[in-house]
Every structure is written in structure tokens, then in C-alpha cells.
Length: 245
Image (cartoon, rainbow, N blue to C red; front, side, top):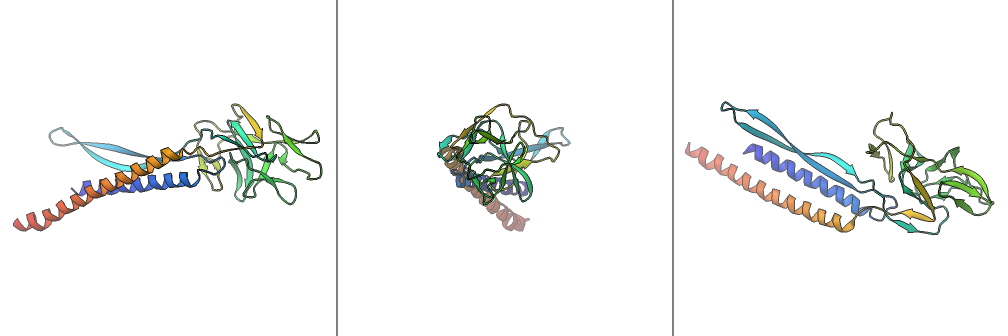
């Protein structure tokens, strides 16, 4: 009976964690380049053999891992020449306070020194280093291959990084990632095209997320009722059956 109470508490904890993930997805449904995530819970059976050579299962429920869906979102036209989207595989390479980071958010701007930066102020890498644009040299054009040009002159090329799939990346805030393992090597993209004047929208499916939120909430309530029932049964066993004994 005590084991069933423990299992119920574990199940409720997992449902709370699932709701947290779904809530984060919904909160970022309008965030440029955001990738949705989902918590997977696993249960594993520890089989023990009793004196009758029968198997009994000691089940434990726990949050296994957070799976990030790296599939592409849609594409929204902004007509801003510094907004770019990656169509295909890969990430923009940026430099933040804690080092090199990778993102699909291509809503770029210029800082006071002319450097290309993300919406959170991180500088954007080109193949030669940080990309710097002279505001006095006219409009910027960015080709499908990522070449950044002004007045027909090549300034640099966007550094598009990719990693071995399935990705093993960590969210590091500000819609950016870094490899889980420091030794993970950047690999060439399997194929991409840069779309100037567009941004990639979030890949969060709002309807599915709302449905999942309702399901997780109902599951939590069901487990809670079962927990209350087990608690009442245990109370009776202690206060009534135990007293008779």
C-alpha cells in the first residue's frame, strides 16, 4: 500500500513537470525560431523472484528526458533586410556572455558600432569573425548562401553551424543552445538556404499543446483522487484493523 502511495506521488510529480513544459511552449508560441519541447516519462520494472519463482514488479515512474522538436517552423515575411531565416538544417552562430551559442532566431539588428547582433545583443559570427556593416554604404543584401553584401562588395558570410543528429544540445537562455558535450564538433549543414527579409516562426502547435495541457491536468486530478482513496484505506487499516488486533 505504501508503494502505491509512492507511485501516485511520482505520477503527480511527472504531470506537474509536463504542464511546466507545455506552459513554456505556449508562452513561446510567438517567439522567433523557438523549438517546442516535451517531457517523456518512463517506468521501469525491477523484477524480483520470490520463493515460488513468481515475478513481481516494483514499478517506479520518473521524468526520463526532455525532447526538443527541432523541426522547422513556418516563415514570416518582415521586409527588414537584417531579418534572416534558415530554410533547412543548421543554426546561426553568435557570441554571448558565456561564449559561443547557436540559435535559429534570425531577427538581427545593428549595434552602435555597426556589428550585426541578435535581439538580445549577442554579436553574430561570419566566416571571418563578427559581421560589421557600414550604415553609410547603402542597403545590405544577403544571398541564399548567406553572403552579406553592400554595394556589390562581399563583407562576410553568415557562419551556419550544424551538429550530428539527433541533436544533443542544451538550452542556454535567450532562445539559444550549446552542445551538451564540449567536445561535440560542428559539422557542415546537410543543406540550407537563407531567406532575407523573413524570420522563422515558432514550431509550437498551440492546439495540440492546449489538448496536452488538459490531458495532463486531468491525469493529475485522477491520480490525486486515487491517492486520497489509498490514504483513506491506509488510515482505516491503521486505526480500525490495527485496533481489533
